[in-house]
Length: 185
Image 1 (cartoon, rainbow, N blue to C red):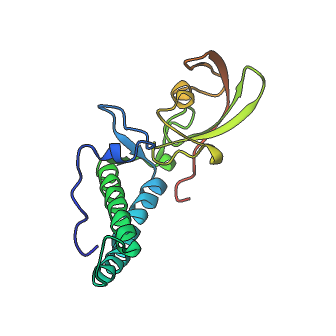
Image 2 (tube, rainbow, N blue to C red):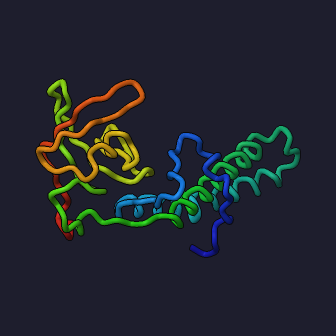
């Protein structure tokens, strides 16, 4: 990157209320894949999208009356959105602690990065991978390490029955399988 993106602010998480917060005092654990994805998004925003929007805004500003210039108004709004996202990503990446699940030596227990198959009390099997808060994607079976299911499963072994506590109920989950990626994959 040619120059540094705008500095971060303590309230940047407020710009993205849909983004889960890192618990106070906790580290922002992230897989190498998740770190690469966020780093690439930051690079793309800073080196591709932002310069293109700045160019559009400069062109639109040169066209005269800005109050009714849609290109100028939309461009300035988009520029603010990009800058907020850049600040947010920088803050998250600066606080990231990369944990490579392929390097996990204790593969008999559930830790960050594990792919876990469990059965609930209704006999339904589910497979999830425990990842960082910015990597969670329920549609792909990727859950945040701070989610209730992940917290219940952490440190469990195959055959263990753990208790999932949610605001509405308690449920038993039996760990069926634990898998970690192989080193180098």
